[in-house]
Image 1 (cartoon, rainbow, N blue to C red):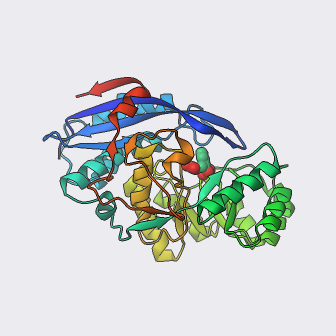
Image 2 (tube, helix red, strand yellow; image 1 turned 90 degrees about the horizontal axis):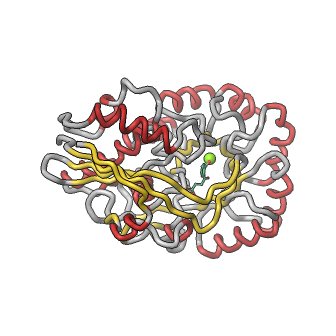
Length: 368
Ligand code: OSB
Ligand code: MG
């Protein structure tokens, strides 16, 4: 296939509820939709993940635009590509900027799957027709509010509950959750808010049978995580620290992590995500699919990836209605009893809802 044209739509959507982490609060989600066209007019869709501010990784909405427009598109247009795995190689002169790369790469995967008459899940090697999902709950203004929300999501059937913790909002919160819900599959995500100085505090978490603690220490660390894991019974799951297969290999070899949260955007696309998945499977390390508060296109990519066999733990892919009044794809993503059906249509298996997309679009640039 030859990429002849790319439509890049700048979107701005308001989330139903603001999402609060140890870094701050997010309610307005800005992102890009990448629509790639091949020589026959077939299309594929991708969604960028970087937030407006660089708190999760160093990328932002504006760096995404800069990278895609000034570096990635010129490398890609009019190149002959026989398989999406080659896109990584084409983008290799550009360091990191994984979220910008993933926005285009995922669109090419969708296009490729459609051209070859497969679902995206099949194209990636997935073999399941439904996935179990959990939900990630942001920091709340009171513990009572958090308890109510957890109760609500358990009733809705989510298969695992993830709560955010940070210094000063941790042990007491987890203790109360455990008292109220003794058997629910529960985990905590610290988004890099602790250091090794907090080891005594983090060890107290071992009393609460958490499935895992996600990214307790620095976002670029794997050494201290290995030290911490030696002293903790609770498994560590790395998120921010893992940007590539090489990062995953090193973290697993060092004993820094027992589980990996794979986010397509953070690792630069579906090819790298699949490589990490395959490596973890070989090493007996379970993985799950993380989220970036995506709209429907990004969410559809997450679902296809989660259909791979080593995604044995429920991820963060909640249903469309958890985030949006109206999602940008049709049909929207629905969670029933904690499961999402992997779509049977070709590619991502959902159609972009152009009416909704136009309503939330700020502008569009065309590259050809
Ligand atoms: O650390 O997994 C994270 C949201 C934004 C940035 C980072 C994270 C998250 C979440 C929610 O935990 C994921 C989602 O619901 O899409
Ligand atoms: Mg995380």
